[in-house]
Image (cartoon, rainbow, N blue to C red; front, side, top):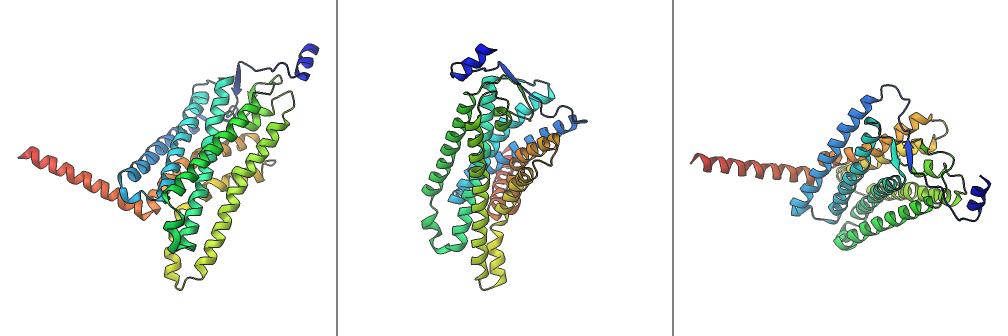
Length: 327
């Protein structure tokens, strides 16, 4: 043991376990029903986001800067759900709680990258609505295809680099206390707290990323809607105000679904029991990808009109095929 401590002090060796154990939902009664719910959520997420992506791709009228961001949101929701939920079902439904060291770091990287890009995408959509309402005459000059694509690429690159740094810092830690992660996936915070050497860099980075991925985006979105509200107050008629605000309802719904559970968790962290915290975190991770496409299909007139048009064209083509067969 003295030799081990000496090695750690000289930064010569690191204890990297062969595997971690995801404890997650163990000890929670009747939790098998939650897995059925997870399957349902995942299926709806995959179908819904695939439909939104297909509609935007097929309808040339939807190839605008706003719908580039919506397409990216659907894509990252699909990717995030596929990274998180199947592995989560495998861990807990089939009792495969052991996950190798490298697989755990990879799992963490993909989950956190997708979650980060989801939040940044809401910022992009918020900026789009801000310019559309405050500067409608200059919208097409300020929010171009090139600008939106550049913004989305920047968000992806930033999220990937930040999460690579987080994973890199974890590889500098020695896990000699425990290999049991008290979460539903390879959670960054739960992992670095298992280390027996100094995890200050990982802790500082975690606090920095919380500010950058939670508080800064939320502050920007709130400030943008304060500006939108001020701009709408100057609009002449109530009907015009309602029409302009209606274009924001889908985005506001997405913001509420994503941030309200997260804020409750972070502000009430000490008061929430561990099992309740794990359930709340898991719901906050899997609900938005399922609800985002439903909200956009139901609350966005352009997408509803596009879906109806695609279905109408498909129905007419089937009718033509039937007539040809009959003849």
